[in-house]
Amino acid sequence: MEPKQSLIEIEGLTKVFYTDEIETHALSGIHLNIYKGEYVAMSGPSGCGKSTLLSIIGLLDTPTAGKYLLNSHAVENLNFAQRSRIRNQEIGFIFQSFNLIGDLTVYENVELPLTYRTGMSSVERKRRVQESLERVSMAHRMKHYPSQLSGGQQQRVAVARALAGSPSILLADEPTGNLDSRNGEAVMELLQNLHREGATICMVTHDPRFARHAERQVHLFDGKVVAEGDALEQVLEAR
Image 1 (tube, helix red, strand yellow):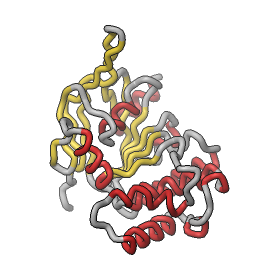
Image 2 (image 1 turned 90 degrees about the vertical axis):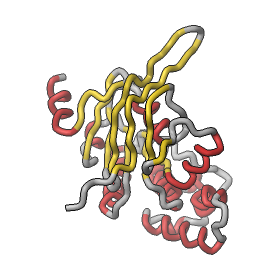
Image 3 (image 1 turned 45 degrees about the vertical axis):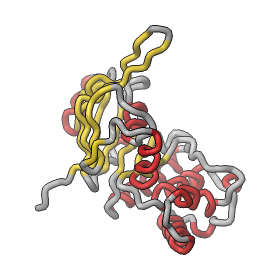
């Protein structure tokens, strides 16, 4: 059996927000490894640091201190332009609110991030968009606009947009938060299928039902990782 390859290595990560001379410690010494091909769910109460950590993993934010390696490259101190380039190439985002652009078609929404890839031909963009939409069963809606789709369909398009760039990791921030239970389960099933196909996924969720879909669970509390895997079940049962 081949050893697991680390995709994300985080050591001693902290994040402090300063407002009106008040320090808010959102993250307090996080240690976390995510391996290639793994499906990790991060859970915990509101305000525990889940979304802050996901923003740092996704290079939308920078840590106050600590180390962060992505594909063995240190990325904690990159400038804005460097973070943007790596984010576009390495990371696919799935947001709670879908974040589709209303006056672009489904096809154009999925294609948009690819237009920022230097050297990618229009033929290659078209191939990637069509393949991604087929993977989420939305190719038949490529000429429609977001307003013509249900919430579940919009989230599928958002997943296709994340997939089109062939990212190293998919980051999903409460991907079922704006969906009813039936559509939420459908999105969870889609993520499980993508994981079976080899995708690395890190998902933030407050819902323990959805967290159990993941291969590994990480529980945060007061800006720290307090439990993982089997230990997590014991923490939840004790509450």
